[in-house]
Length: 315
Image (cartoon, rainbow, N blue to C red):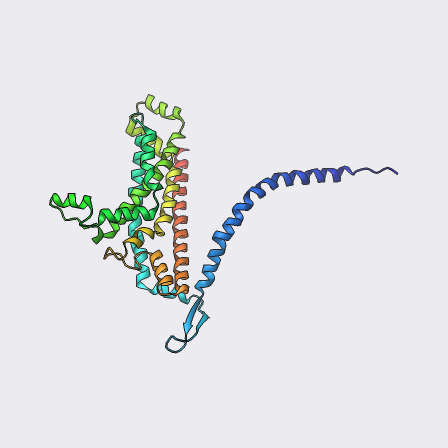
């Protein structure tokens, strides 16, 4: 008795092996990321949402045992009804309006200067401008605190000798913006410079042949071609700006203008570790995450809509 293999079954087995080979490698490579993403992002977010739906109450004068009570959206109502929490979002909005245009514009201008034909020692200036980002944020803030403190700051002493009386800690928002500019401009400059280096040089040479000067080439050729990088930097900067915490937290107690709820993150930190109201802290964190997601969506749609309209106009 002879046995044979059915042709259709052989073809299906071969197709199955091809599918396993096609999807097996991506699955193996994505598994570590998915495990870490689940453990470090999804599970904490789920725990924060669950925590925000409960609160602890004590009987009597507060000396009894704490009882965990389901409050639903009660913590969210408390957070949104708190003027201090809403004021933190106002501070974050003011910070974004000042910091994002300054940082993006400064990084873009420096990147265009480094990419120009007149630039010399590009690697040296790239490294020099990037070094501040390599300094940990807490150490950088402590250094700025030294420069901002009257009586010990050589910068303030020099300005006072010229007849001025600067008080950077009296108006903390510009001081915090200056710290962030010093730390993040070089980082985003590297992103813009890498995008500029990826531009086809023949396009730039054609613009020069057509009579375009350096300024016209930069504004009309280079900037439009790296617009996706500009949009990406803007998106990440918006998200990071809403999470402002380190700089004002170190200024807290030193600058009279920085309160314990100066930013939404500081409000959540104070609620959790000073007032031990973990439900309120979790709800404030969830609301902050929703605000960041909403702004990210708005920035993405805005930049995508502009790009689509520009492509339609060019067509």
